[in-house]
Length: 153
Ligand SMILES: [Zn+2]
Image (cartoon, rainbow, N blue to C red):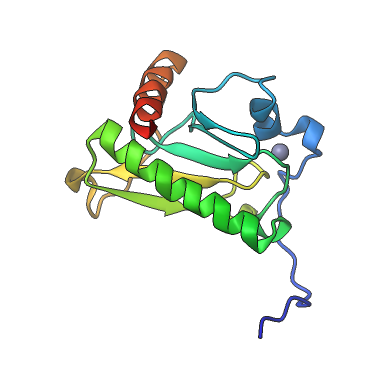
């Protein structure tokens, strides 16, 4: 049986109220983003500093810092959507594999304190190599987002 009463805390000095949260602002269209997918509960958009072309973030619209702030069924839906999106990401970027990464807390390099799953497409050329973040323009991100959105439909 799972012990849900463990007194452990996730440290996140990037913690902010929902009204100041960058991903909440993207979800409510107060900040621009290259959006790939959008429904009532979830949103997916291009990472502004991607590890590879096609690096997508999948988030619940509802603010919560880590997976511990979500119900088990919400966690299931989030990951199922990320897997669905991974197929479109791979098709659009002609990749040969993908990473799904989900960081919880500052020690895990979580940069924005709003739950998100990274979908990072990779090619054989990336195998065993350190991947650095790229600096792409919003136009470049929008172009890839459109191709992924098209592949999703
Ligand atoms: Zn948020």
